[in-house]
Length: 107
Image (cartoon, rainbow, N blue to C red; front, top):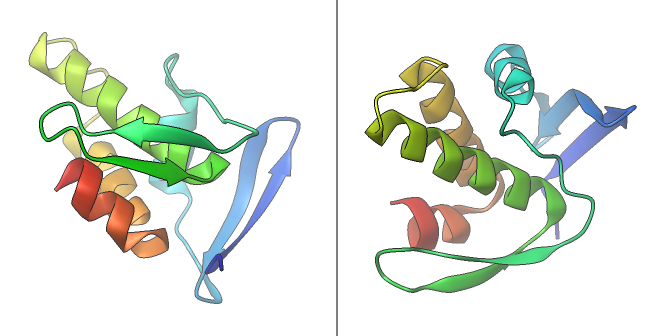
């Protein structure tokens, strides 16, 4: 069961509540402005490139995980266009909505 509520308008997340509390949108808005952000509309499988662990994610979780992987790949190439704070916020958002996904995929 999901512990979050999301409002999407025209393909953009406008608000997010986790465990009934409004989540700050500042870093999520920054993430959504990145050219590599993709808001998925279906569930999908994700895998940890190092451990091989696989887990099924819902569309929001998959969007966040995809952002984190893309941001980090750019960071490793020296072209991170968003501050590490945005990456950290997105990582911890995944932790808040799906601790298992965070532990298996990003930790």
